[in-house]
Image 1 (cartoon, rainbow, N blue to C red):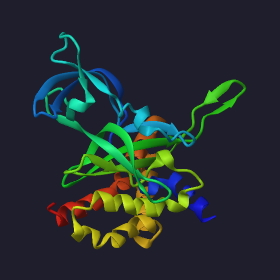
Image 2 (tube, rainbow, N blue to C red):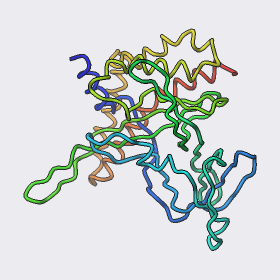
Image 3 (cartoon, rainbow, N blue to C red):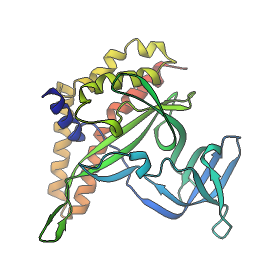
Length: 290
């Protein structure tokens, strides 16, 4: 029963998880600055680059996230200008990609990293996977993330398929120390099932310990940090939920267009959802200089 309650909490995690941009899909050409491992910088355009910080998903399809968003791509198609020939750049040579607005200002940042997770035996496992992920908060401890926009399952009746309605957002965090080539998955949805839900808190804590190893001062209070994630229904979190739902109620009253209403409600979920992780990395970056 306890595992089932945890599972229901995760699926209804609009209380805690989210982000703040939209899923754009692939663009034919997008302005970009590519910072290479050797220090060189290439400025021009990426072709068919998937600007993906959100992924639409139903409640039954929430696995293989990095692959579905092409974050594990092996090479990038780059053009110095719109009419120049395509150059292929291997991910091994890339350090950072900065997506640019039309005026050349920074829009989104993606960093390359390898991934480690924690299995149900509480062992740290190298996933042997190199990915490039969107940066949310930068410092000595960096926060990267993918947000799932979850919808109720599509239904089909008399040959007509009806799209499910927006349910919540689910934020998948990645924690990476600036001096490490590895990011850790404290909440590894790719390997979550009903049989290992009871291991989630322990796996989360180990991933957090691994990512914050360079700072003993932070690790000394790691049990206190974990309380935010271990006791999601304490008084302060309940109040946050009530405040958020009041905002969403006002959106429903003020918005007539259903698509706009869903988008605005998703933004509210995102605003409140990322707070625990932003607070976590802020606490580390304020306390730790290494």
